[in-house]
Length: 347
Image 1 (cartoon, rainbow, N blue to C red):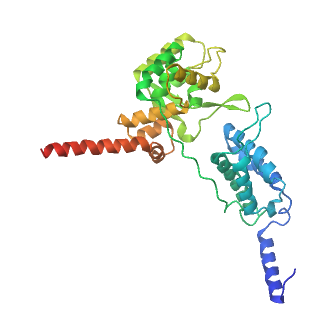
Image 2: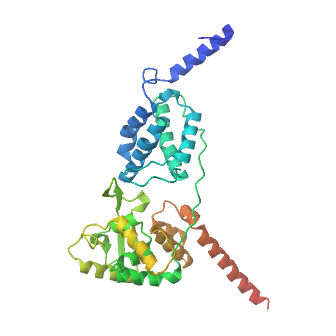
Image 3: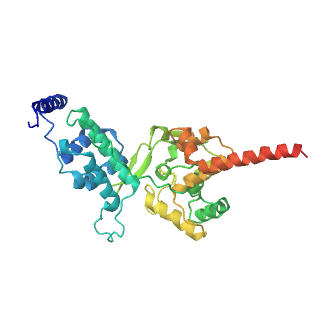
């Protein structure tokens, strides 16, 4: 160990001994970033995450982390290396898929970069806990700001036209239920007849369907709060009964008209797109029907806590923050109303 003075050498030696005591020196140099992140995923992550999350994690690991910094020895990984890695991801990290047209824009969205960071940070935290590294080098990295996406909804004056077109396509029950419950697409299409209680007019949400590696996979809903029981309007119950009578032996509420099996989520989304085009409405995502339900509920006087439970959110605060546009208008309407009352008394 080198130093300009004996005191400096002693201090460096003292630091080295201290660090070696904090590290498991028998294992600390055995891992590259690639070997450790795969070990972490297999041992700590995979047994505890949902199938849909597994798809995201394997994509982040195999398509981004390992090609970007996988060869770096784990105990040599620095914050600046990770920061450069994130910068490169944001600039040109999108992966070219086989048999697809060449990408014109290779930039990766802030949401994906932040997702990669969350995974890598958790992975390195475990390395610290196992004394493979002294500290987490991902801790000090600067992340791209999330893009604030403007919330769009189906205009109220278009709802009747939208449902009429859905009925023309034999899908009134499905889209009426969506607009009166705000279900996630995967929750809607995983529904079975046994989830409906006709007597109590309730619907149990206990599962969802997602496409994972090209196959449809049914799994528990997104979060614990997403498992819920919804009250239905009588017209929704009547429509669901009529829908079931079309295919009484089929367990699904909304089976595919072509195959009789579970309705493919992508095909269902395309039907939504066709309905919008047919009625001359501006394009919105299928998920925006969920926002439409939430916005109309708030404007109709449904309290935030009740709406939060119906949507399966983890807190009323999250719901309030998500639908600020609607609650702000409600506050203004309330202010105008009380202002009108007081003004009348002044005349």
